[in-house]
Length: 607
Image (cartoon, rainbow, N blue to C red):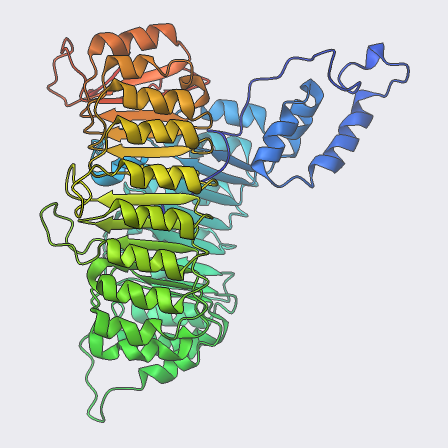
């Protein structure tokens, strides 16, 4: 999952205009100063200064200095991040920022990835692209995550921005190959077209053939999520006339033989490669199989390798020539046994990012720990996600990683059993952790050795990993674990909770003790009205709160909505839910500068 990505900014780059205080600099109140400067002179100076600020956090801070800084910062910002598409209206965006060239916009909350949100909930891109088409004809980049994007939206985008260069769609839906074809055809300066874990409808359109017939500007092309056959001859031609292509990620309809031909054509400049199916397909060769290793040997610049869909194990050694230079390896679609995996990983000494299925077992993780001393990020996904499955990774693999990969900063680990001792060891061995997400798939599972709750293990993580900003907890947890979070988790910005806690006091510990909490995701936990009310002093400073299958009453949710008018309180149910129901199935709360949205479907009640 590309989820990801933990941003360090507030929910959006927009702020209400700051008041002019007598304690601010004299630039703010020139009339009271002994030496005055015309406003346009000060604006020119500020513009020249602020253009060197790239960080969103720095720019947000600068905009709060005084009214003049707020105004000039709005005129000079070219990149805007909006963490919730309903936190403000598109009109407010264009009023506040006049020269935007790049927009990063997020829609549905993360729990939508787990089918916890109805598909027609919203997060439509249409109002945004129609507004920007009028205000920002110079727009160059759009990066969307969990948005509903239609073919018409993509057509309008392609027609409205003649200099458009980058389109990134992560976990988006609503569009098909027809829309992609329009972008490929009309965006003549396109550099990046990345479709990542999005649902793309097969319209039986040959979109690859729609790119310009002359030399292209393409630097990145990722379509591994597109579940539709492609015109390989057109793709071969596109790669051949794209001398700047650095990233190429293929879908499962591209066979290993076709990949070999592409590598021999465009290998010298590629740095990131998604291999496609990694099986031979229907090709036959009377002289024996081609030398696939030779094709990879030509890829001297590749440092990121992914794909491996429909893997045929006998061909996996072909990637060995590139392993020594890899910094990122993604096996999250490959069902690989430890015996297949170990010869590969033993050559990956430079690896910093590694994703895989749990089919590599604890034995494979031990091989990672012995080899990858520079590892910064590890994600282990379940091959069989059922709660009652026999998980092949456990505390043994995690302990090995903590002992061998001491520079680890980010962990996502799905397993069926865990111990407090393994978590305590990781907290001491990997103090640089900023992201720790442990998903024990069976509900309410204790330490499988001692039978005790997992409180002390998670307590050690929040106590000893002092840079922790993102935490996901699971297993048998009592209120004590949440007390540790409130006491030590002072930098936590995102907290995900599933099947955990004893009472409302657990959530109260978090809401009162984690001052930087921005995103709170809770499902199937015993938190009710008292817990919800305990955070009313915090909700205006958070991006969102999600609570599903908890113990919330409709009356309490209404009370919160009345007490906090700038907070949008959505109750999500089904089309046939009774409006007078006593309890709430799903609560989604977020702050908004422009009030409740106008496109809520029937199953959403805005209180």
